[in-house]
Image 1 (cartoon, rainbow over the protein chains, first blue to last red):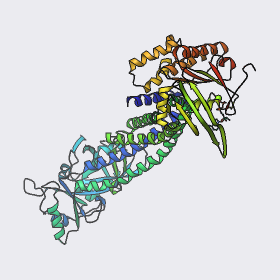
Image 2 (cartoon, helix red, strand yellow; image 1 turned 180 degrees about the vertical axis):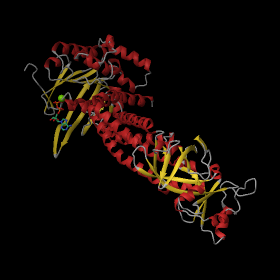
Image 3 (cartoon, helix red, strand yellow; image 1 turned 120 degrees about the vertical axis):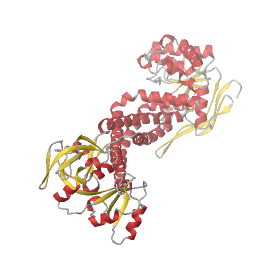
Length: 396
Length: 231
Ligand SMILES: Nc1ncnc2c1ncn2[C@@H]1O[C@H](COP(=O)(O)OP(=O)(O)O)[C@@H](O)[C@H]1O
Ligand SMILES: [Mg+2]
């Protein structure tokens, strides 16, 4: 065993130390693998960051009630009457006075300008109450103060502040005929709510001519994950056409739309890998051709063809692992923590951060190794089958 | 075949298929090499000298006949067993040295020992002894591509003898060297034959080189022919 390992080692040393003879080709192969790995990692980092943002948004102690079949908050409408009925349902947590804890909310779309591209995009503006504010986990005012009821004041999420122009503290923004003053900024720990503007719900109702209707209500559950009491009531009361899900489930459903992007990312990467593979194959066939005399000499001395095979394969793997490492480093330097926004649920912008995790790096490593293995295996087989009499050709 | 016979070729034939053409190089060749022999093989270009040497070295297989080496048949060995057999029995010396340019002289000489059970200390001792024998002890750490042709061929000889094989096969070992250097190399081969009992088969174009051998065989069109040495 040690004998075969030292044989393989000789072939590896022979191949690696002669990389200089085909340096440009080797660098091109490394570069190709690096690009492929970087592309894959950026797709994965994007979807990872996006789904973390959505997952982080949903609480399992809060249920969200929308009109049946409305899919997203934007399309839902709930009358005051409906709200009065459904909030009597069992399973809703009560406050000190024995009243149910719930937050009727409005959800409208306003215009924003994306800083990076200068393009106009849809931003979600939410009308909430102080109860609604408290229903968000990890919520805090990060600068300024909370809006006051009855005033045209808004607080803006940290994500909005980062990605969209004109929402700095103290500025006045115009939406249609209405004007609002930014009196504070808030954080919800990096989740999707940070992509929103929040205002007093009744003020928003009057300014956007919504009368007394709301779009959704959020209720605090007595028991986490248990919406059965409300679901039962909705089912048995013919006046109620509602969907009740926990907030966690609601955002999980929205996040599933992203599976498509992950698959798309893999498909793109695999297509590009074919190109990188061609580069690796070319480099390795050249390596074998360059080394033919030496490989044959070693074989004449008595080295096994296994050593020629694995020595060649190792060179290919070394090249692609270097490429994978470069690609991973590049995506880590340029992408990890990069803030971006994209169209999320309700055709509004969701601000999220690219996130590179160990798991994602493992994906990148597998891709690089795959290219190295496939790109090396055929040239390695050629090296192993090289006729030994090649070593004597020079003497003919 | 006697105990003194190292190599015996019986009715060996060898042909190549080139496209649709079948080329016959040997057809029923008989040959015997005694232990301790120093045999020169001469002949015009294309007469089959290299092909014969390749078969003796077990890097090419005959298409017919039998090949016996030291009492056992070797022409039917598998590729893997043949590699082991070569490692144990044959030392090759090539016209263009065939050294590994990325390894220093000592590492080049050590290569055949990587196929043995010797540990690194034992290998180091053997390498030193072989380099000493070819007069290159002081060049052990030198890169071979910075050496002269004669020095490179001496490294190659050290590599060929380091694992103490029974048979040395040399294909035009002085073909790339000037007269004086060639004589040095040939004297070294003669010494290995006389003092260390190595059996040597050497292919050469050069009648002056052949004079160092104990006997010379002339190959022509795949057959050994009698030849007037004076002519
Ligand atoms: N692998 C091969 N395929 C086809 N023909 C070959 C091959 N090797 C050698 N030959 C032919 O066999 C003949 C003898 O070659 P070789 O043994 O190299 O002769 P020499 O070494 O005496 O010059 C030549 O005609 C050569 O072209
Ligand atoms: Mg020849």
